[in-house]
Structures are given as structure tokens and as C-alpha cells.
Length: 153
Image (cartoon, rainbow, N blue to C red; front, side, top):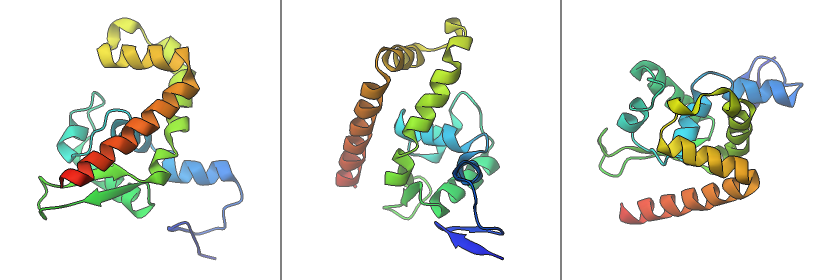
């Protein structure tokens, strides 16, 4: 039986929320792209390629398409060119921020600080100090960023 669920076509009816979440977000790159969009305000293809993790262009293209299809991001293309294209998190995309933060908190103590840049050290300090305030602040900052970006187009 094929069931359409939240824009995702599955061969079986989902029976577990965790399994469905992993189906949507569980590959190596999806949450890293959403992290870059929400926390680092990256919105262009070229900006995603410059991330420390070094995603391949074909994988980035596929993940962006998947995020679009599943409603986590929207695509703005004001001039109809690749260079003008921007990718922005939707409300559903922003709702992944708590997952990103929890994954961060799960492993941050295992990373030697000498490998972190200033931005990463600042994020570490802010999340550890008050995880909930960090989340609230980042959501507000991102929403304001998107409003300004859309107003300028």
C-alpha cells in the first residue's frame, strides 16, 4: 500500500514517529544544511559548499531538492538565475532547531576546542549557558533575517 503523508510518499503507513523523522531528516547532510540555513544564515548554494564538512555538489543539489519537496525550505529566485537563488527555512524547517541543538549538546564536550573557530566557540558558550534562550534568540534572529531579505528583493 502506498500512502501519501505530509508530502512524502511512503510504501508503508508510518507506525513510529521516530522512524518517520529519521526518514525525513536522518541522512548525514539534511540537518547540517538546515543548521547552516538557520544558525549561520546561509542561503546560497555556494555558501553551503563552503561549509567545513565539504558537501559534494551533487549531494547538495539532491538534499536541497528533498528539503524543498518535504516543505523544510523554500526557494526564492527573484531574477530567475542560479546566482540569485536563495534557500530559506520554512516554519517546518525552523522547527528542526531543537533537534539540531540536542545533537549539538550530545557531542560538543567530545570535540577539542582547538578545532573550533570563533563562531563555533560562541555558539558552544551560548548553548551551554542557556539552551532555551539560545533557541529562542536564534529563531527570532532567523525570522528577522528572512523578513529583511525578502523586503530587499
